[in-house]
Image (cartoon, rainbow, N blue to C red):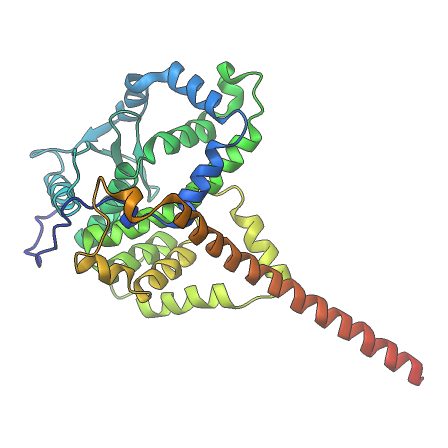
Length: 332
């Protein structure tokens, strides 16, 4: 990669707490995950079997750790992001050779970030800053342990983890997937906060959805598509939307873009840029868990209302169709 061009200065968010960017549905889903019967035992057995060293060896054995002479541009971007987000401890950053555009925050006691070479090749410097900030958000929010569990379960498979024998694992997997999708909404906000570039943040979703190079895509058209996906469709479409996400670790990119756009439009990002955010050490005083649960209930209620509304509309139309058919039949 070429050197980083001179960029505008970014606000250093001194002592910012992860609470500032965490989506209420993320925190609520995490509480639900921890309450799933057998979850604590799954965590204990996986951590006990692999350990911190084993996890690190699993994921760094075939990757390159960035440094002053190894991917120096990415190394510098991580330094910038850690400074902007006032990260207490800089994680390692590894680049792995794979064409799949993805990234991750992995580990237990000392989480590290992985960027796939496919993402490095597709995204420009501003977009990579967003992606690295996104993964640093996962690290600072303490997501890495649970994301590591999910990666192991999905890639290795329950059947290849004999030390989990005797546990009822499907509810754990489903709860992990639901939490994982909600945790991405938090990390998306962190990506914007760390990069402080809304257009770049939205372009990341566009490129994750369809790739593309400059001149081939239109960000406005993509955001219109995101709103269209959310707003149109009847009951059957809504059911398909739910089914399509059940086994996914991430929400659809159009939905992520729309959710982040709503957060910005609500003024929350602007408040953070003015220095109005929760500081580390004051999280519970400034944002009690009860508030998060109430906000999360509102988030899920809105989703349910859209689903129920579509079903009700479909039912009304079906009832009207039956009524009209009956009237036509009686006229004959």
